[in-house]
Image (cartoon, rainbow, N blue to C red; front, side):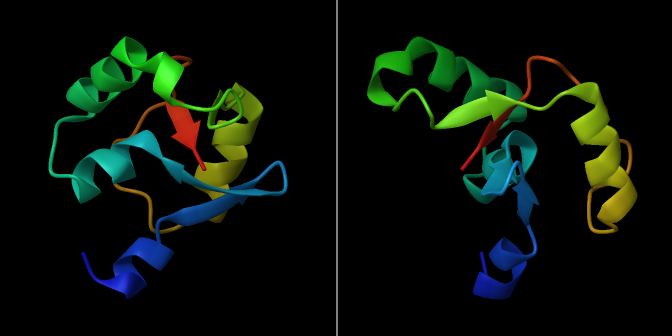
Length: 83
């Protein structure tokens, strides 16, 4: 994936630079579901501050402010944001 495309998938939330799980799944060419399962199965490999859940308010702010999110993405309380 080109550097510019990756840079366009980095957002700032809670003063942290993050990537959303569906963008990481696309980058690694796996289904989002498979990425989430791999993370859940290997939680001990990730630092405790490696990911967090967006609140519904944060999600709405993100989709309001970012015009480069894919169409049809929906809020899911189980969606990790990884930074």
